[in-house]
Length: 257
Image (cartoon, rainbow, N blue to C red; front, side, top):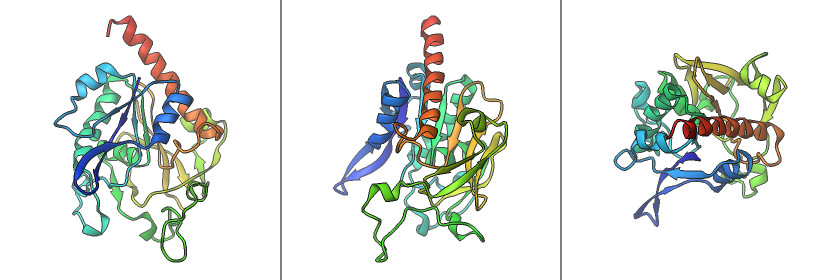
């Protein structure tokens, strides 16, 4: 079983809910070969110890909300809302616990950013505002509306250079890849245990691993969950994550947990 973190959402602007994009669940089931189990990003109802005693891996998904700036010593700004402070309160200690216990961890988009913050790193609220950076947000029509075609939205948009001989280069069998890109916030300063393994052509950080992690602990800024059934690079990531979770499961069963 792989735990998939939820995101807070109001239904009809009044009913609080936790949601997960279906692509994440399908990637876990069809490619990682595991049962996806959504858990609430709400600290009052999610016990991290019980969660990690139950699942064999954790998937930290993307989400509309940004990580709250106070988590990396920056003042919040209304222009960079929404935030999901409950998710921050669950995800950040969960990342540390996964790494400490050797529970496989895969962060995507917001999850990638959370991994950086969990180890003391910082984020920039709008990467496109930095000199020389690309606009990594989803494409829009001339009238400003989000493009209606999902294939356009999730199309590969730029290259990423991988560290030669690094975990990603070994796993993917190449040192340059093309990825989709749908984010505003991004890594500014890497956390103390964060190793940068992939950067876009504008030097935006796109792939990371946790230094000296006891198990699988990788993060990507792009949306690998969109097409792992057809994209060989994203398939390789989810298959490796699934194999790590299977190894964890066998060890957990052998240990009686």
